[in-house]
Amino acid sequence: MVFVHWQKTMNCPKAKLDNKRKTRIEWGLKTYDLDSCIAAIDGCARSKWHMGQNDRGLKYNDITLIFRDSEKFERFLAMNHSENKTENGISNTLSRWMGKEPIDGVVLNRAVGEK
Image (cartoon, rainbow, N blue to C red; front, side, top):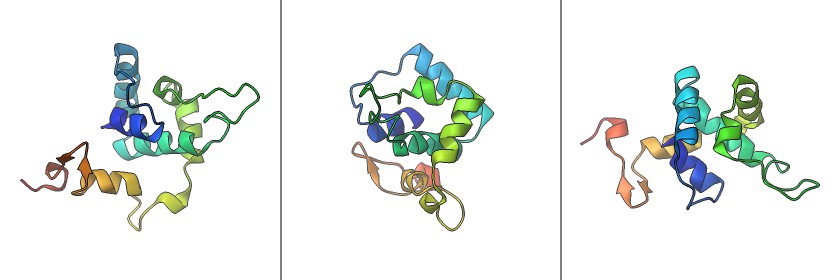
């Protein structure tokens, strides 16, 4: 779920989930929570510099950078603005994932306890 969100947010649909990326995502989920992982990705996407508007014209938005360590992760988490939160503090993106919106043609009802 975290990787697919990163692929869609960063417009990298052909990116592969290799062992390095998987390891960093697992670290993020063990160290933080799912909502924070999603928010850190969203925070990176809000950074014009990380999205390529810098002196080199390069994107610095790989999931291994976002999840490199606590310092990087928390910096990206802080970039995620509070206006992206719903009343109960869950990100709008995570709320969509937990609801009944289709993701790649699949409806995820189990996340909200439905069958």
